[in-house]
Image (cartoon, rainbow, N blue to C red; front, top):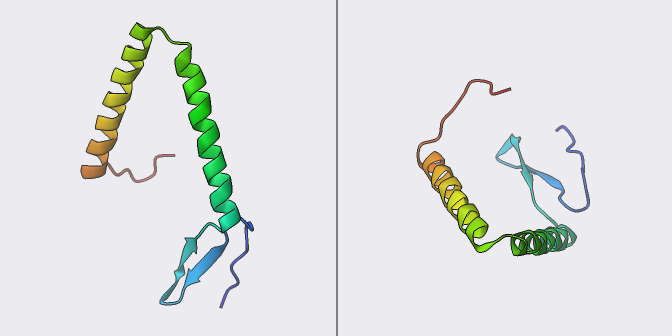
Amino acid sequence: MASVPNLSPLAPLWERAEDRRVLLLRTTPQGDELVSELRQKRRERMTELFNHLSEKEAEIVAQGLKIIVKVIETEEINPVHTENPL
């Protein structure tokens, strides 16, 4: 059995017993806390940025985000696969 490196105390890797080719990544409570803090900081930063927009600019950004969400949802339903995108 090949050893699985412990990449971080925030999100250790686990092998699946039924298929050792599959590795699972699970955050620890410390990792969950870090993710939560980073999300909160991102929300605060986005709020700061949006507060500098005029009402018209905010409407334009909101419309753009709606378009992006629509594209993402469409991709989830009909994913486009490429052989090697790099």
